[in-house]
Amino acid sequence: MKLTEFISLKSIYVNVEEDSKKNLFKKISKVFTSNESVDISSISEKLNERERLGSTGVGDGVAIPHAKIESITETQVLFLKLNKPIDFSSPDKRDVDIIFAIVAPENSESEHLLILSAISKFLKKKGTLEKIRKINNAEKIYDYFSKF
Image 1 (cartoon, rainbow, N blue to C red):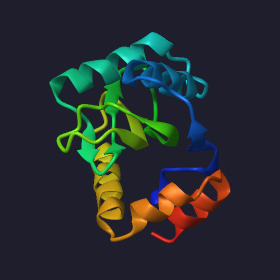
Image 2 (cartoon, rainbow, N blue to C red):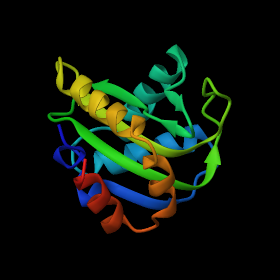
Image 3 (cartoon, rainbow, N blue to C red):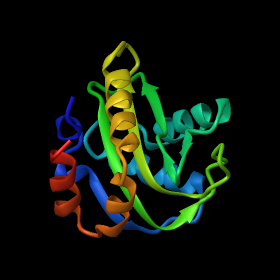
Image 4 (tube, rainbow, N blue to C red):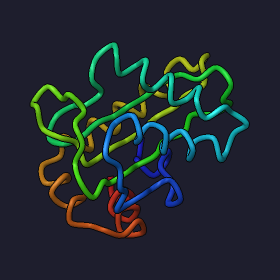
């Protein structure tokens, strides 16, 4: 599965300013709800609920917050690159500046797992995070994603 199969150009955000995970989840929720008739607070609550189970920070300054939402109809993915890293309680104690956020319909069985797997494979490729951190343009990030 290619990253560009689930991340579109319009779902890539660079130079994002946020000071906390809670505020970041609110911002993510607003973006997700612009495409669906979903309550912003329900997405934010689900992301926070998932985070309480264990950090979605995966290390190396990356987090993959994700949640299943009853009222959405299709899986959506956002990529965000923060200007300043924020605390995500990651296992390596490193603050996060790269985020792949995923919301999936409540009844979604495997699609979000395939997306998580594709993101994981991308992150494991040597040099990808260095390259992404140097790019400050959504179009160039999308082009970079299209190569994987």
